[in-house]
Image (cartoon, rainbow, N blue to C red; front, side, top):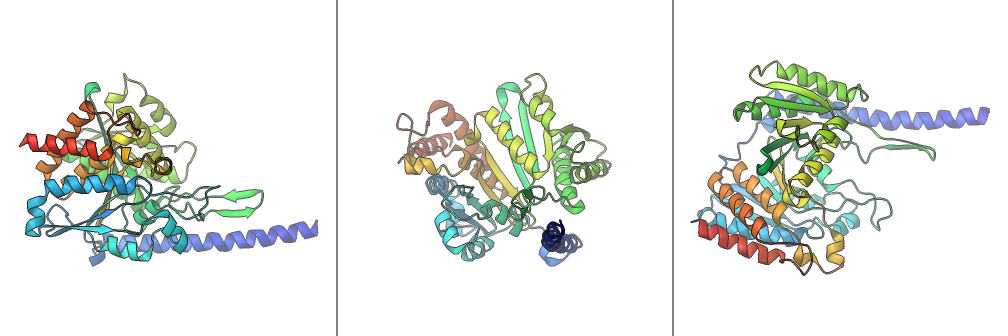
Length: 397
């Protein structure tokens, strides 16, 4: 019995040390955020719509990523041809963010890739592979999680539209905290006990919630829905909900309501209720799950784009994964580029090219109805679909 107590005491001391390191890191992070908010030069927001020249980076990623990024770059090259000629827009291709290279270097994002990304204002990124148990790769942190944290891309913005149902949702997912912030920092206490952590800070919750309310106010939308599980996850989700209550007092013209995530997920399947939602703001994990559900209702995760926004940088990407199996089976040329092209349209809007973005979105609406991509040889190739898309854009003029 004495030996067991001593062994347990040693385990507890180790856990306390590891947890202490995590707490210190998060306290330092909060201090940096406060300094930025107080007006430090590093925290001065950039308006990418006014930034000229604007540098756009293209990152292929894994699996089908390089295939779809190539087509998206081709479309943006056409739409911004005159801006590229004058130097108003600069394109840069960034290589090296592959799972093989990341595994070899034991880095979620290789240092040279991160440096290259930081020399851009915005990037369009293909999907990356995150190793899981049983994979032939080391247990690296998600490249997306690393990028969001290092670039402080605190807002994941995902629009979902189903016009025939009158649905026009915009989701604001907190991107740097929650259950993902320390996803690779959990502690295996013993063989029988593993503990992960969830992080919510006042400043982190406040800024994503305020962004959602600002968006609603700016666009004449009078409803914001906050989604948590604060009845069960009382501390972290409770803080998120408390911040929503506080921020809402600054927006008297916007009505807000609160839903628990499980009921909200069910109501998205309720055709009689779901059209009532407009702007939705959620913590990280819930946002990841709910936005994929919403994209599936729109037509599948391959139909939705995603924006990751911070004060200095912005990253746009497809919602779906890297689909390594398609590459292994020789089907990568049949990958659906729709999601990354929707993300490209979001990028265009973000950097101030509204007409070009509308042209791309309109052409996508036409082509996704007219042409079929199945991921196999009975559908169009990625390149053939993009050829039709470019012809459709040209015919708009």
